[in-house]
Image (cartoon, rainbow, N blue to C red; front, side, top):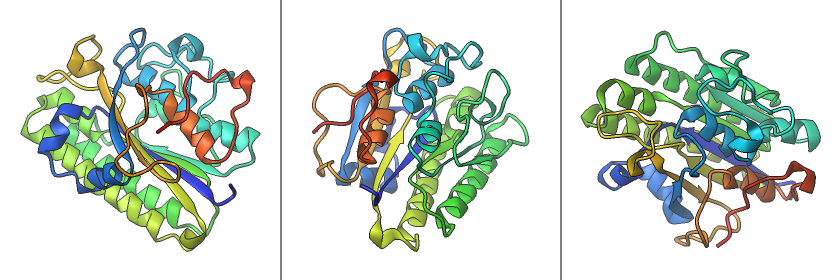
Length: 281
């Protein structure tokens, strides 16, 4: 499947229950072309960004990758790497990762989670505020557009948007939070346009996966075991994912990395001991 390509867009902290009320045409389009389905954060996984994103991009749970909080110290990413690193190092594929949260991209706070993709883009927030994170996500989106428009062959990429989560922490899940979700959807649309505008697009088959890591309490915040905090979601479309058909059985965060490999025609090595499985419809 040399024409196969996969793009994963991670939008931090988006509540599933609010999506029907919001103007998110690009996410809705992915759902129509494939599916959007709930994910319950595994019972043993803290509802925090560090462990959830690590499970999403490695395909294994916390007891294997060793990330239990927003500091990534004590991780086992040398054994259970993220998919952009494994694809580049072990499978000869070209990959990228771009975003603005330090431990995902820099050797700080126990990171980076993305150790060695072919290309890495980090955009530092000017300060820890919703406004600064909106600007960061704008620059992250522009960097993703740039990478996708390069005259290069990329097989898989990951784009991280963090302003929605930051807004909830500062002001809760009211009007500003909802506006941040809608802004993230507009950025998703720009990234999708960059995919469709690729010079090589006619010869490529793209799978697109959009995923959130956890929810939020109404007043903002997460880390507990409430239904709002534990409810996440995955949306995806592409080859093998019929429109309007949700995967059979419950979805798990670890399924994202597993589906990335499968979509690229790569049979996961049993020694990788992935906990997830490709989306099955």
